[in-house]
Length: 286
Image 1 (spheres, rainbow, N blue to C red):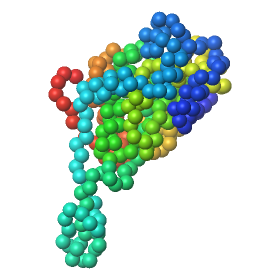
Image 2: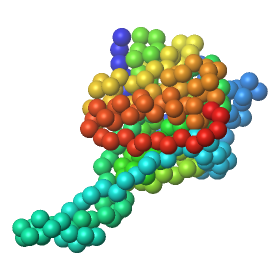
Image 3: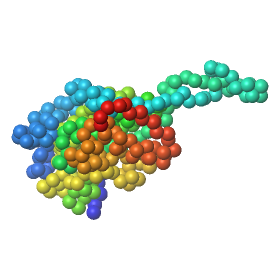
Image 4: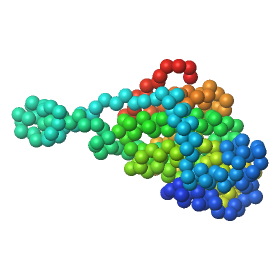
C-alpha cells in the first residue's frame, strides 16, 4: 500500500487548500442537501469556510458549558526551584556559600514551561453523531486546558489519518502553536464541529492530487496516526472519537469521554517522562 503525508502549517493554508477545485466526482464537501446539513452541521461548504476563518462563537459557548460539565481541573502543587532570591533560604546551602540558596515559589506560568506536542485525530466514521463529536472534543480541550494550567505549553495538530483504496494517507494541520494562547472560538470549531472534518478536510482530500484518485466512493477508513511513522517521536497521539463505539455511554457526555480518554493520554505522557496533571472530577451523573 502506498503512503502519502500532507501537512499544513496553518489553519489558513488548510482552508485555502479546501477551497481549491475538487478533482474527484464525490464532492460530498459541497453537498447542499438537508441530509448533508444534519450530517456535517452546516448548510453549505461556504458556511463551513466562514466558520473556519472567523471562528465559532456559539460553539465556544457550547464548548465552555461542556467543559464545565466535565469538571476536570489539575491539582497544581507549587514546584520548588532554587534561586538567588525567594521565599526562604535553605540553611545548609547558604552556609556553604551557594548563591542559589533561596526557595522560589513563583507560579509555574512565570517560568520556562515545557512543551507538549499533541496530535489529535479528528476523523471518525459516519456512524458518530454531531453531539458525540462535540462531547469528545470538549473532553480533549478540557485535558489541554489542564496541561496548560499545570505549566505545560501545548502544540496542537489536528489529523485526519485514513486508509483509502491502496493508499495510507496522513492529512494534518497545526491549529495551535506552543507559544499561542488557547483561542476558544477557533478550537471549538476545529475540535468539535463536524463541518471541519466532513466539509473542510473532505474538500482538501477531494482537491489533492494522488489522494482524490484513491477516494473511490468514500473518504476511507478513519484511524489513529502511526506513532513514529506519521508523527514525530516526541508527539503524543490523542486517538479519535472511535476510541468508543457510536451511541455508547462513553460519548454521552464530555465528562464520560474525558474519563475514557484521560488514561490514554496519561500513559503516553508518562512514557515520555512527563507528569500528567491529576484530574479532579466533580459530583453528579455521568
